[in-house]
Image (tube, rainbow, N blue to C red; front, top):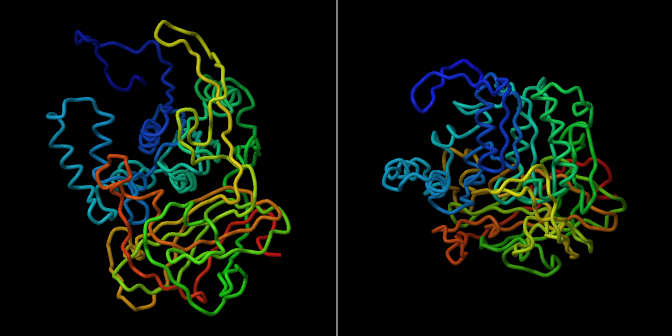
Length: 461
């Protein structure tokens, strides 16, 4: 496309791509978005811009989370079969190598996954990107989690042009949400980057953030400037500023997030729950929380799960519902939009969609997951000594979220997260998910805390 190599027609004669200016873009959703990220990270000249819509930047994080397997076993070979339509017998040897090298048995990070690391891997590195970047990330995406965006975004060269949308949806192309704004923004982006049209796209605020149903704000970058607020669980079930004394414990069993977060005042052998007093003012979180647990296990490892929960009646984006008319935070609202020209094969018309909302008493805002034996390294499993105390600290998934005045922040400590749980066979039925280790996790409250990046408001008055 750029004239640096010789192209040939189907007769073998050299040809020139007279139809191209040599200024190329890549755009894609999910796997196709990841292709653009990977190519851009090689630093190839002529790729002027990429639009990455929910595309992964780390193959490891696409199937695992801190040592836990969050997708089904054999996921790498399955993905190969999904995107490559060659006959099975042609690809059998390669797919077997994918199975062997990806090492599902341990969940560790290894050379196979490093090669598929587009942040700082051996083939593609964020720091080598020359192209401008327009990225879209749904912070409630279960497939490509928010750290796929945040970790990569932070590593991009400071001098490249960039723009982002950060939403409360799941694994969505924004064509289904805010369609008119998206089309206008995308066209102006390509006009400027590929055709040199002198519009104002680069003078607009860099980041659009969705704070709730039909609520958007703009800002200069992501995350927004924030201060760190550290909250500590108390013996009485509250969250405070000062360390507490006492202990608590739970069993590592697989539960859904709704089950883990429900009825926080009720004793549950599979979780511990702690809540702040009602918030005196609206409090916004922007960035990546972290959690630190002082614990003992009665087995060599356990799944460590942490939830940050918004407790309070409200109407929110319903990212959980999956039906024929609603999914990933949107629902069909009737009618169609027709955009651009139509052909016999593609009429250019698409169903209209809008925010799918639900009124509820709580909402899981973000979460953290860790296989305890990977607390020192994702590349090496180190079983814990039963009965020995450990201090384990790790990052939760990023988020941008407003807690309304009168609501309460909740910290839930638990085991295997069934919403991100391993499906042993990949049949999608959920009847063979990993049940958890059954380990008892004993928590020392004095050494346990959650740190939150707070933009405005105070979690505790």
